[in-house]
Image 1 (tube, rainbow over the protein chains, first blue to last red):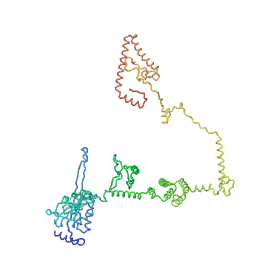
Image 2: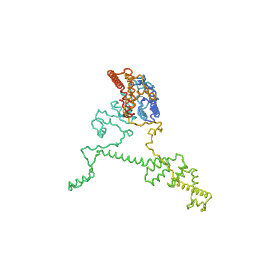
Image 3: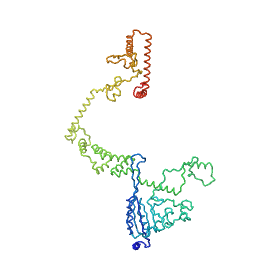
Image 4: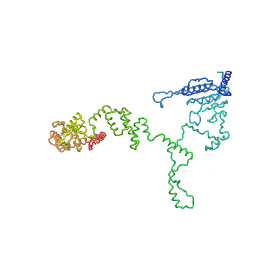
Length: 127
Length: 490
């Protein structure tokens, strides 16, 4: 808590140069998940870059282990034939980015980078 | 990280979670807004300020202050908007069901080109009376005249255009006009020519212009000319091409000539053509205005004649004389008589097969088509089953030593007699050997026996025929197609 307060103070001074000091700072966790690694990485990079441009404290994209959902089915629609099986998989990639900033800024950042297929979840908590 | 400071703790749920959802009713799937997905009390002012979803999901504080549809009357501006749209004012917020049209969205209004207004129902007739002028004074009303006037100016109309909002009509009209304008700008009438021109050279343009002057027809001639010009170029130019071009140049104007010679090296004549032309020039071109014959050269009536010319002329004269003589002599001779033998039908022994196959008659051996005879039994008269009349000996007659009795039957009586005779002879021989005379009973017995045999033979034949009926049917089919029509196998 103390560290957070110190940090908050520090942040406040910095922010005072650019923005109004009354802005509430929150700890914001952005969770990005997608099937598509490429898009996901792109969005992550954009977010981090955007946040760094605004001189926010960013905790870089944390890569949560990929969840692979398997579906194994018989290829044949009937029971006839050699028992061949299809192995389908569905990969979910997840990245987490932590920021400390006001919600408005975050909204700005997230509104810029919109990539189809990437799900964005933002959790805002008190500092 | 400094402890579990404030967020994510089990006890104090001081956080709010928002998720990006596509905006409801938005055409663009990338148009997303933050929507709160948890039920904590924590408030974040100014994060998800637009509530596109039903406010049941989010807290009232999270929104802009959108009213719950059930709580109280709608705000005035909302109600006004609803009324403007023509929806009833019953306290329900119909605006939440509206879909926003974006300019980028795929839903652009395209007026239907195939839309036809409904035709009139059958019991209604419509007239266009827009041209009827109604007179100002009523006193002049004479029924007959007014009827005529009205009738003269009205025209029957098949379809009535439905009454549409004038604004809409104006918009539609405007769009039509704009379309027409754009078409004019977009495509010229001769855009094909222009496109070709863009690839080709200025030459073609000039030619085309000239053609335009002469003909009045633009498109067909121009295109033909363009194509014709393009084709000979990739081909190797022959002497003939050069000569043709020269001719064309001569006949179709000099302006092209200049451009061609100046611009393209291709159009310069090859050396051989030039040499030939020089020869030609040196030989016969009459520099003088007077016409000169070879005789003039020979008799040296021309001042400026060279020895070559004189010799040449002399030779020419001599040759001409020879040719003349020969021609005269030829006409004096008898004409060569060309005999054409007509083919007579009698002498012709060829048929189509011979001619088509190009083999001679000897190879093809065509048969004469004859009328088919009455089918005779092909079995020998003496059946093998006839025990009483069989001989142990099969007699062979003739040069070929054939069993005459068992050969296929011929219609000639002589042969019949021959067959009959040996049979009878054999029968009688046998019995003569055995018994000198035949009694009546023996004769009867004999004849009865013969009858029995024949009866049995007939039965056997019938059975056999029935047994193989299907085979005969097939054979009949085949024979019907291929053989003469009178063959009957069953």
